[in-house]
Image (cartoon, rainbow, N blue to C red; front, side, top):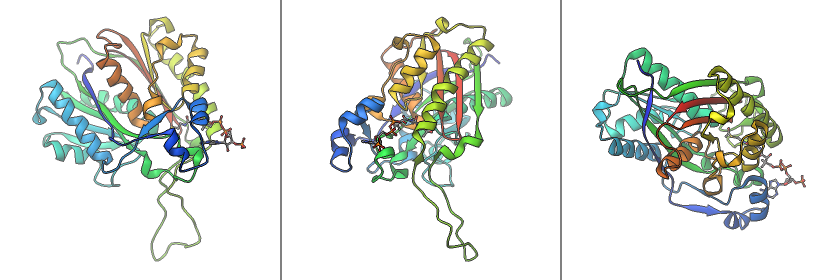
Length: 325
Ligand code: ACO
């Protein structure tokens, strides 16, 4: 087993774009506030698209670009916190839509750390079962979880999907260098969404549940600027690498100020931390693969580059994987 290799990447986002000025007509906010605090200028919002339709489009592009057929795919994993249904999983829907009848498929939920957690799962499954090809997708329609009257969360998030076709081709050198994942469940209450209440003739009617996104922004900000650099440093130490060995940091796009602070703490130049949050907002599990696919398309990340993928978010979770692209 030569470890996994990312063969190709692709993304798909809803066509409808909502900029900060349009949001300012719906709630008491402004382009200036949103830009200064977060770096976000606009986001893509689903109109008819669903998490599964976006993820399916990504899977179709991955097959097209790689020249593989649905029959070549052994495993489909979708990282999402905003599935179409509790069951079937988005992964199973993608499997059915593309006709990858021999693949097993399921979802994982690690919120904004979903892509890195997904890479860990896919890597281990390819290794354990001697399978050949997996599709890993981060896909979200967070717009359906937002309270569009709550300016403190509504301006931050966007919809989209992206993913990678991953292979354990024995003839190519593997991608994996090192990883560091952590879950801090005791802090989970600081970021919640989509609460599903107990509902039956026996349930207590007085207990209220909220389906909406709720976030203690200050706590999550503090968590991110402390825990992400620590996670990256642990992953570097495990591989006996220094910060200068990383060509590109693909960080979860939650807030440009968080990324600037992380770069400063690590002592690395912002030029190594590409940002596209201005265009998409925070797309949770989709944010890292959307950025990765763009950077590969633009030849900013090239074969042989050492890339640190790092995400943080609901759970709370944090995760870093260092790979050679
Ligand atoms: N427009 C205008 N004013 C606003 C808005 C808005 N959209 N939202 C809040 N305000 C106001 C507040 O009411 C507050 O007013 P006050 O001072 O009169 O009380 C003021 O702006 C400042 O609000 P703060 O919350 O203190 O603003 P802060 O600088 O902390 O920025 C933010 C808020 C952007 C949410 C920041 O805390 C942050 O980025 N936190 C981390 C979020 C994050 O990374 N989440 C990742 C989650 S990923 C996942 O797992 C899905």
